[in-house]
Length: 303
Image 1 (cartoon, rainbow, N blue to C red):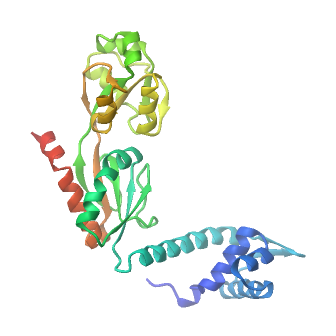
Image 2 (image 1 turned 90 degrees about the vertical axis):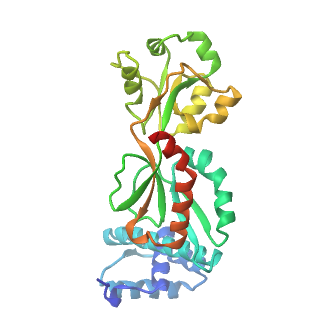
Image 3 (image 1 turned 180 degrees about the vertical axis):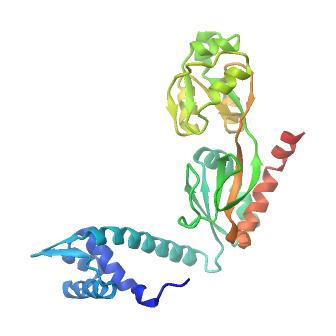
């Protein structure tokens, strides 16, 4: 249902209100907007009259947001930001070929970014924007066309397709491996174990899989794979890391397998998109491309 037009203030009124709220000053807002103080005051008063709500407490030469104004400015600021972003995207690509993708940091930098030039070369009319998101979000509230998700095949309000499964190995620095001289799974419990928030029970699963008691497992906690990987390289402990994301470190010897005992992760990587955007041409092109790029991974996992 469309909102009544009387509740759709002009951008001029909203911009004056947001600037005054952010700066806490009519004078500063006027300077920022290249207007006179009286013009900004009139615009704010016109907005208050339109909404029939007082947005500022006025005390001599100062202004202070009311409780309603505090709430309203957060919503207005977000709306203005989204309009500005949409305008910049349209200016960068007048044919509307902009695609915003939410990525996981390590997957995005290690796997996706090196491959994107091939996608862009095959789709020259598309502009890609990458933003970082660590957890599922509401596509209705976030101006994103697609996301890379690691977890279970569950995303409210989104459609998804499997990209690839994940195999992890216990990895560490060569010096740490030599110091502890790991021979069997139980030996790893003598070393510091590094944990990832996205895989909170990974070490318990690995130890159980390899016949070792998994009670009382403690250690440093990391929220990103890249940080955990660097900590392992620095010799701070052993981390369970995805093989496909540490290939370079294994080749260079910065990381070595503590033991050659891999484990399949319970979760997997998916590409996710809002159902109502499924037919958007840049999204369809990206979805087809990334599924083709990961086809071998899915085939090998299913064989």
